[in-house]
Image (cartoon, rainbow, N blue to C red; front, top):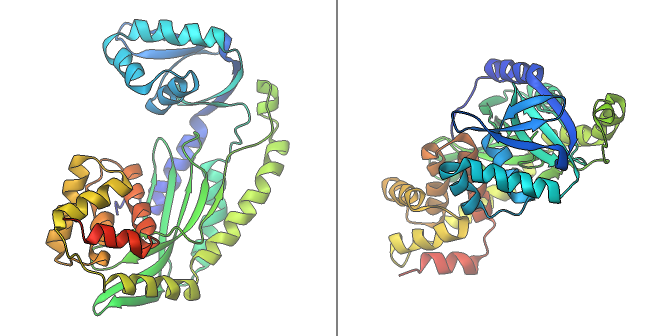
Length: 348
């Protein structure tokens, strides 16, 4: 688990970003990608100006226009003028209303005009007071990346041993994306004290997609009363699920599952087992090596040891978003059928 920001730093970053946001509704046919003298690309919005494109916005434009990602990325790196020519031609052939979200003058997202903007400050304003009401709650990790908000908290009062000396605590992970990179999510967290790993549980998760009513122009975009009414049901559910995620009964059920994994051990080749496991969770070669190294250094060649090697890889992840993906992979492995674990553990 990466530490990220303190609670004060998180609040400061959310507040600072709130003041830098500007959103627009525009017809794709009116948009123009341009290449600057430094070869960087900008998106020109009529009557609004030019906005440099961030990584996710590039990905979303390429995906929407059905330009294969490897070709899009190659044009961007080697022939940005050709990229602009391609994008602008497809903009003209695919007229549709799009929502363009900017931050500090940069294009951060290229979205449907049905995208429901549930903001990070709204999530924080609902979730943090509930967390602070839970006795002895501890924020163990938090961050705001270009793609998502994350708040990870644990309750030391709810804990247990998976095996002797291996203590885990109950917690919750709250996340949101303002840019189309994921749903509003509240999920149970298991926090392992031995190595400060986090595992995001697949069961008991609440998700709400950012789908709302169609917005036709900038005037509709800022009709806050309508938007807030749409958001209210989601925010109330977030409030309720934050409380429910730190539940002693459900935690005991997960603890039993974790304890069960300690009895299943690798009978084949550990390196081969990690290779099979890595394919299931989708890692590159460097990440697979990190998992194998964590498994060997941990000295636990059981299914539980392999799960923890995956969540420990979050410490070495290239960024916070990827670290959380490893935590979620651990939760997926906890729910893996015994037949699939058998395939992993017996790999030769």
